[in-house]
Image (tube, rainbow, N blue to C red; front, top):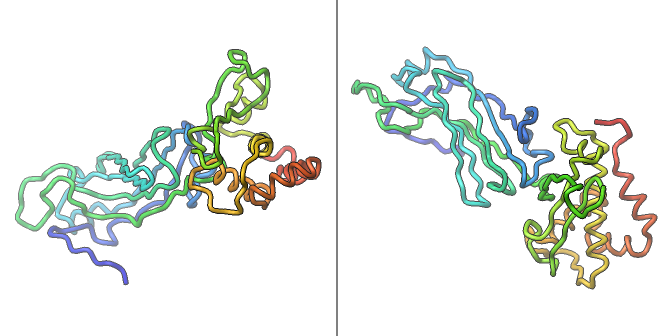
Length: 289
């Protein structure tokens, strides 16, 4: 049964407002419709969400007793993984759209988004049960979940000019400083992309080639499996700590190969040519974007 919330003040009627769809963008890139999963995100990328509201100004005034100049459109982004709430406020009379930017490294796993109409400024008291306390809610959208743990989120990423490093002229590489597979992936693994290499420059473009991006992800997955393979680790069938090296690489091998980490490592050792064929079969057709 749906919960019924009783407020001590008048609220916006259900037919005075329609909540629009949510969108997201990575960094300063283009906007995409939000369908649960935020594709291509990583912990080093700023993430922006936005929505709009469609209103009947006369009906809002009639139901709340308030003019639009006193009402704000507020976006909330709640991330339980980091125990943080992020808030952005827009004056409704000025704009019917709102957005919020989440800086790199501030969120993880998933974000719950919601939009609200709230009292932003106190009107002159009228005694007609209109909201009088700043922040009083007048309407709330249904919550929307944004899942951040897609393929891109597994790779904490840095963009460098390799001419200033000792990485040679590769398009990308990884650094790996873990001692155990239950060490933190975020704390021990980095994907480093070479902005001077044509392939590296391609994958960091806003509209990057699907082939180049997929190739990078597959090559990084193979490098991680190779690094694990050369060490004498105990490979479990499951039960990795959340966010650990073993847990994240196991998720990558399941996604790209349909194999557990243990099976992927054994395949890599026993039949490296067959392993490469299976891995690169995941590449999209050449020319795809």
